Length: 148
Image (tube, rainbow, N blue to C red):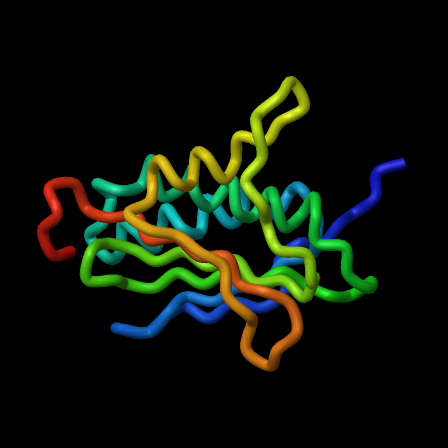
């Protein structure tokens, strides 16, 4: 049986200086769609130079949310991309209360946050607006430390 799954819910295009915000169903297919969206945003912002690192960071953060954010049915994951003086800030929001913890990598995984830490200028986790859930964020900087 071929079942249709809707993974993108709502998008804002991010007017000049505004973040690009999208909502996604908790489905593995959303990772590829979010990567395509971020690539278009980076091209539009003239930040293609950070695309490889930014796309990998997004993949790790969003995959973590899809796999581990156990929330009630109908709750969505939100991505936000915004310009940062160093490059691009990538945020993944979910309503789950469990905060990500770096793990010792093994055959089953555990490399995601290590990869994020290696590629991002900085990253962290904070309480989501409204106090329900969390936002995991990372800033991917333009090489050479210049202003983006």
